[in-house]
Image 1 (tube, rainbow, N blue to C red):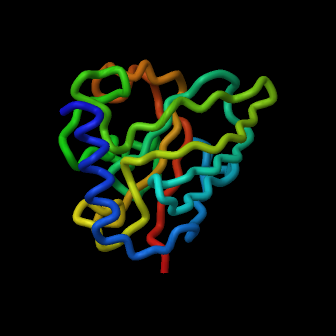
Image 2: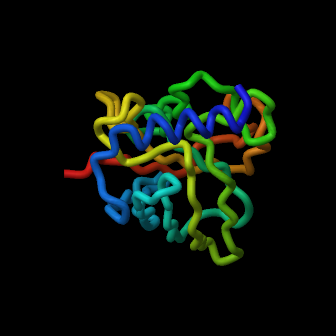
Image 3: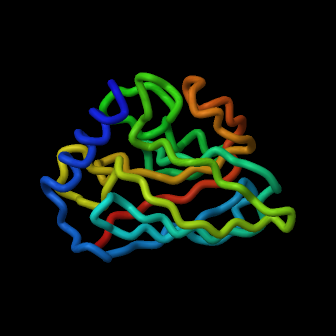
Length: 173
């Protein structure tokens, strides 16, 4: 499926049943593999999808793959988070003719001090609990950070290596 078609479908699905108002937000606490908190990611409903405000510390320097995953669980090696969120059955990556998956996000670039602070928007997901393809289904959703950069095309996760941080995305109340 072409990127333009996927974006149109994601936006149509998302805004057809949005239960949140523009500007509504929730916070996701991120934890490293050792279980320690490394910061939070704020998710804010916007007219363009979700605005993610990322503020983390204690990560290895360099680029790291970053994705929404299809299960809201973050235990052990974070395999409990499942696969990258992909309700439309797309291929992985922004550089794939049949991608991206709805859960694909740009790489995070961590400074030499282990910190990252960035804001980005994804048009492929939203914070609606009533949308047909909600991230708040029975299995929930999580955000996962990988050890290496995502190459934006290799299946299933861009050759990004091990999962090194995870946070459960809890439905707004």
